[in-house]
Length: 189
View 1 (cartoon, rainbow, N blue to C red):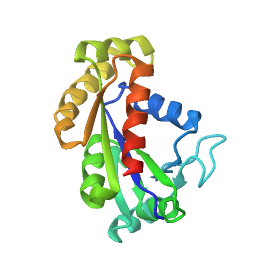
View 2: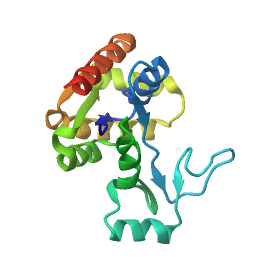
View 3: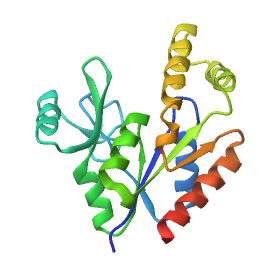
View 4: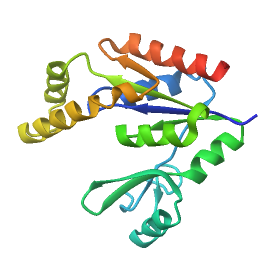
């Protein structure tokens, strides 16, 4: 039996990667993480086909031209990330479910592409003020970068109604349980 597609999207700082990692660590849901493609060079310790599929600029552009991506995004000028159709097929054809950690627009597009074979879950912060506090608490970004992320988050939250489910991450363990239960119900159908 073919596996299903689980889409998790959220603005930066809402905890989507933390939730996905917690669910993968629990190990009670048959799902594998989709490996993204990028045109950036590998960092020290990163391996092709493990951390990312590392493509040259030419290979990435060729894959775009051949419609090889379910979604891709120019995250920074000249720096692309995307999900290859063959990566989703590789996992689902083996009968496993695939989980995608992708941006909000990509999440909407992948859901449209796969329809009922996919479930889309939007992770939302309890409030913009709480999101700002979380980003400030990380101590990894400048005030300007935080304001940019908050502005982008406000825009991305407007996409929430286009997702199958919205989970408010106001308490991490509760959010992990809610996302896990949603995935289990979807897989069981």
